Amino acid sequence: MRVGKTKRLRTSALRSARARFRAIEPLLKFRWGMVRENLILLNQSGTEIVTKTELLLSRAAEVGISSATLARWLSRFCDFGFAGLRASRRSDRGLPRALRGNFAALVLLNCEAAAGKPSSEIHRTLTLEWPRIGDGKRPPSYRTVCRFVAQRRAWLSGSETLS
Image 1 (cartoon, rainbow, N blue to C red):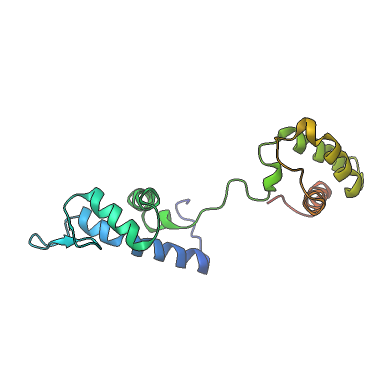
Image 2: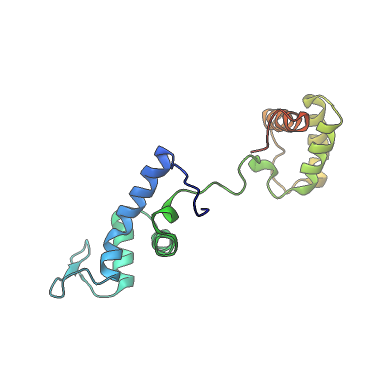
């Protein structure tokens, strides 16, 4: 986040960040020595928790997420504060799953869309070429191709930005 520029968190992102904070809060107290010296921590099975790793594993089981996810949230909170707990945008946002990592299919779709061919013809061409350029999965559905082509045409005409 840029300094001096404030961004309002979306309500869902704020709720998500708060939920993540609640999940890591006991770990933070343990890490920063806020747990009383004579306090004995027990996990759900009643066994004493002695190390940070045991506490992490116990808390992850209690919250219902993996210990790696909980450790990542803890690390992001320590590095970036509360803002580090916000849900981030997916890096592949706006790209259909059937086309992720398939450069040849993306080039074909973009060229055909730029040439002004109808979506039905583009889908037919892509389906015929799929055994050669596909990665073993099924070709994208007709609806996926239609959405992709409409989005690219709107972007090419300058009326919309790519997401």
